[in-house]
Image (cartoon, rainbow, N blue to C red; front, side, top):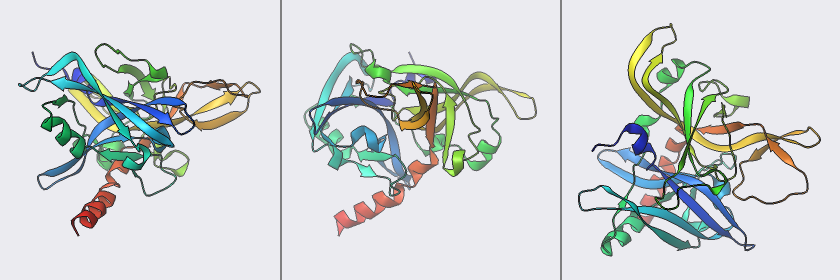
Amino acid sequence: MPFTISEQLTYSTVRIESLLADGSTGTGTGFFFKCLDEAGRQVPVIATNKHVIANAKEGRFHLTLRDDNGNPLVGQHINIGLEKFEERWIAHPDPNVDLCVMPINSLLREADATGRHFFFISLDKSLIPTQHELEELGALEDVIMIGYPNGIWDAINNMPIVRRGVTATHPNINYEGRKEFMIDAACFPGSSGSPVLLFNQGSWATRDGGLVAGTRIKLLGLLYAGPQHTAEGEVRIVNVPTQQRAIAISTIPNNLGLVIKSSRLLELDDVLRSLIAQAAA
């Protein structure tokens, strides 16, 4: 039986568990993406936020196995543990952009050599909206966010949690002058790095009031932070944390999330080209 589009999307994310230098642990979300997707080649990566893997000396992914026909073996998954975890990630060159990727070609080759084959769905640049597509959007659009809020997941079947929301600022406008926008959705620890997708199933409305039949999916970006207010009423913008722990000042989420626009993923292509050239030299 073929997968529905929503079912395919649930296989696009991966749970990231980190052991930090201070001995504490954290969880976050990553998603599979194809970088350098051009001229018949591509570099498969996992994308997430820099703060998800910051100071992580060890990390772990949970990956679902697939059968000989390429189908997922639901309920059969293994943990992949990696040392020197933070060092394996390639950071976005702008220090103010909370985005990084890990190439996984070597990981996949090592698994194949041992007879273990993983099932996942990679998002790619065809899902990144063009400027024209962004201009056709309204200020209020339906979105979904896929990840592991509060570390919650279906541990037996290795499945993430899917949440609905709407855009809270226009996706075509740079919020506060940055290549970001805001969503109205519940954003909790563990949601950092979650892909945020425009998701219309069945139909959607056009700017001129028309109705289009079909399904529309676009990768709008990835969650990284959100405004919270303290018990005293002060509003702060903070990274969506990877840990749940008591802190001195109580903060209360506003059910809003800041999203890095997906076009920033393409800005990592030049970094990868440079690294590939250096390795070949």
